Amino acid sequence: MKNHFDSFMTFLRIEKGCSEHTLRAYQADISEFLIFMDKKLLEVDNLDIRSFLASLHHKNLKKSSISRKLASIRSFFKYMHREGFIKKNPAKLVSSPKVPKSLPKFLTVDEVFMLMDAPEGEAFIPARDKAMCELLYSSGLRVSELTSLDVGDLDIKEFLIRVMGKGQKERILPIGGQAMEALRHYLPERISLKKKSSALFLNTRGGRLTQRSVQRILLKYSRMINLKGDLSPHVLRHTFATHLLHGGADLRSIQELLGHSSLSTTQKYTHVDIEHLAEVYDKAHPLAKKRKG
Image (cartoon, rainbow, N blue to C red):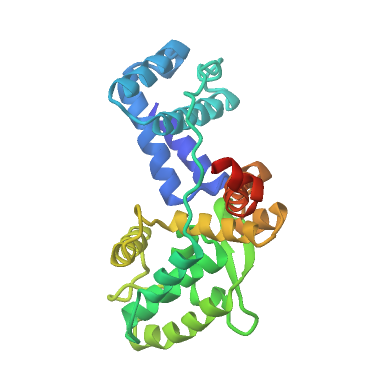
């Protein structure tokens, strides 16, 4: 069983180009399932998988988490079946739990301005944090894309940055004027650390900034300016896409900027836009005011 599992992880790493974060999630999900089963893979059927999902439900796990674990199990058995290790795919007949759809959280323009003004001072840490926040919002980066950036990926003259996205897909993104100004202030501070590293964003010891560190930094500033709810890198990514849509950008362009492989993934932002339009209507339309009155 271990050989099959290792083979699957190699497939994800090399052929699918999955990130280390994604690989850890797959490993944890499938390991948990195999421990629960405690039987040979050839003996696993769809009822076993349903029993595992039921056990997760009894632990009060969120439907979104259960759905993610099932997706990992499906990928594993699909691979096993395709490679001929098993005759039937037991996960094929197992349906996903219905996950309630929620609109992406995003910041208002005023909240974005407050966040960008939160890191104060010219020293290394505030200069780095401001550049990091500006770039996340300016270019809609995933946190994994931000932390994997090298100095060589930055084109200061052309206001562009080269990003390596999911599946090792490269894309070139524009950088806004405010973000570029913040980067120009940060780069001399980065050099002052006198550390040999190709990473664009460094910690105080000169190592590459981690995804968890970025999350902690954003949380610190969100509490500093009293934002409602916790701020994450993904919220800034949602904010980037939502503000582009409000500004008139078309979905196809937003899809390219975000690095989504499917337009359907990008379409969730249209629901946010409709909500925004309804709010504008209620505030501005005479009949809406009359109806409320």
